[in-house]
Image (cartoon, rainbow, N blue to C red):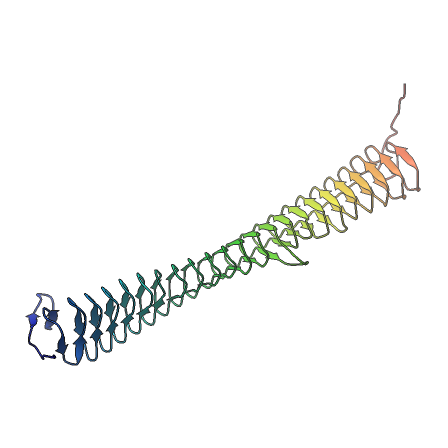
Length: 360
C-alpha cells in the first residue's frame, strides 16, 4: 500500500543564519511514497528525492534516483548507490558493492570492505583504500593515496600524485614514482623499479632489468641507477650493473663484479676495482688513489699512479707503462716491459733525487 503523506512527519525550520527553508523528512511508517521516492525496506528506511529507493532495512536514500538497496546502507546524492550491507555512498554517482564499504565523492566506487574518497576514486580490490582525485586501487588490500595514483598489485602501496605500484606487495612513494615488479620499493619523485626485490630511493633513482632474471638491486641517491642482478649504487648519479657496487658522486661500476668507490671512480672491465676520486680500473685491475689508473690485470696504488697491463705501480705519481713491469716508490718510473724500478730518478717522471736501497 502506498500513501502520499500518511505516516510521515514533515518539519520546516528557518535557521538564524539563512533565509531558506530547511525540509527534513522522517519516515515513521512503511511503505511510504514521497514525491516519487519509495521506501520498500523492512523497517526504519528513508527515501527522499525523485525516484529515490531505500529497499534495505534501516537504509537511507537521499537524492534523485539514489538507491539504498543494502540493509543499513546510506546513499546520498543524485544516482548514488549503496548496494551492500552497512555501505555508505555519498556524492553524485557514488557507488558501493559488497559489504562494509564506503565511497565519498563524485563518481567514486568501492568494493567489499573498501574505501574510496575523492572525485573519480575507485577502490576495486577487496579491502582496498583509494584516497584522492582519480585514485585507483584494484589489488586486494591495496592502499592508494594521491591524485591519479594507482595500485594494481595485491597488497601494494602507492602514495603521491601519479605514483604507481604494479607488483605484488610493492611500494611506490613520491610523485610519479613507479614499481612494476613484486616485493620492490621506490621512494622519491620519479623513482622507478622494474625488477623483483629491489629498492630505488631518491629523486629519479632507478633500478632496471639489464639481464634475464634481474633482481635484488639497490639504487640510493638522486638519479642513482642500478641494473641487472644484485647491483648496488649509492650516491648522486652513481651507476652499477651486473652485481657491481658504486659508491659516491658519479661513480660507475657497470661491468660484472666491479667496485667503484669515490667521486667519479670508474670501472671499464669485468672484475675491476677503483677506489678514490677519479680512479679508473680495467678488467680485473685494481686502482686506488686519487686519479690512479690500472689496465688489465694491473695494480696501481697511489695518487696519479699508472700501471699498464700486468704491471704494478706503487707510490704517489709512480708509473709502470711497460707490460709486466713494476715501479715501486714515489715517482718511480718503469717504461720497459718486465722491468723493476725502485725509487725515483732525477729528471725522469718528475724525479729530483736518487733513492738508495739497502739490503741486508
